Amino acid sequence: MSETTRPPTIYDVAKAAGVAPSTVSRAFSRPGRVSAATAARVHAVAAELGYRVNPIARALQNGRTATVALVVSDVTNPVYFGIIRGVEAAAADAGYTMLLADAQESEELERTALERALSTVEGVVLAGSRMSDRAIRAVAERRPVVVLNRIVPGSRCVVPDTAAGVAAALDHLWDRGHRTVTYLAGPAASWADGKRWRSVLDSGPKLGLKVNRIGPCVPTMAGGVAAAREVLRQGPTAVLAYNDLLAIGLMRGLAEGGCRVPEQVSVVGFDNVFGADWCTPPLTTVATPLRAMGTEAFRELHRQIRGEKMRSRAVVSLAAQLVVRESTGFRSRKRTSPASGTTRVAGSARQASGSTSDGSR
Image (cartoon, rainbow, N blue to C red; front, top):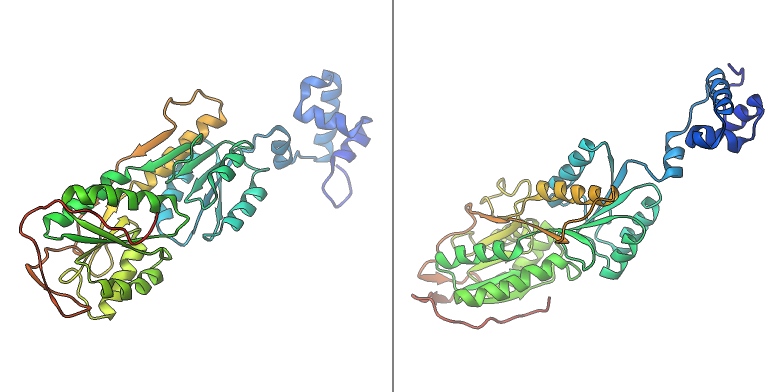
């Protein structure tokens, strides 16, 4: 054993074995490229000196780090809790470690995180990415990529069945007598927001619902509180929010404005995040299978990493379903608007009604 206080290096082994450092490296990483006698001498000297191969350095040499990256748009958003657990558990089952990066709703921070991670991971899951399709495809040229909650042509994607979820929510509101629904929009750069709004525009007229839009809004409880003033001004009987955080914040803002949920305004969220049933009143929401999405995203990624033949369909769609709680109620035949104090009378039969849009996707 060497008397030096520092750990022995590859150069110490090379000097003691009488070979070049590159020979020591090959003896550990590619033993077939050195003679059996040389490899045996190198290993014996290394054992005597107490030399240990750096597993990270070796992994970087052969490209197999058994590590994947999950990049989320905002780690404080509970919508990612289930997704993170799903990716992490599936990765662990396959012998992989997951690195988590938070983009903080910033395309610039997302790009920076990826640049730092790509050299050390075998693949990437992008959840709620704010980058362009072109930028995502550029990442996919360097490492296998799976995109969550968004469809990027040419990439493997895992998404919820948004159209079915929105249709179920609007049908639920129609059955409770609502004839006008306001969509509370999320970030302008969000693919999911555009998909949800287009689904509202598609399903609303089929039910005879008049739909409009407020936003874009910051997808947080504070964003929902801020949007409450405009909701009170417009006076809809029902609101479908981009996500649960907006919906919960909206209910808080409506309460502060003297408006009762669901007696005066029914509110529906999206995603069924942790805590959606803890607020007052408990939130009716379109539940997306968050943990299952994370699990399936890693499985798709792992297939790419292993070079398996991919499925014919590039997009995996998982079912979404409506969870009815206490934030939605029947609209009274006569209703006093919290904004104007006027009386609104609901129609008694379904009627074909064109949709109106106050914003673009």
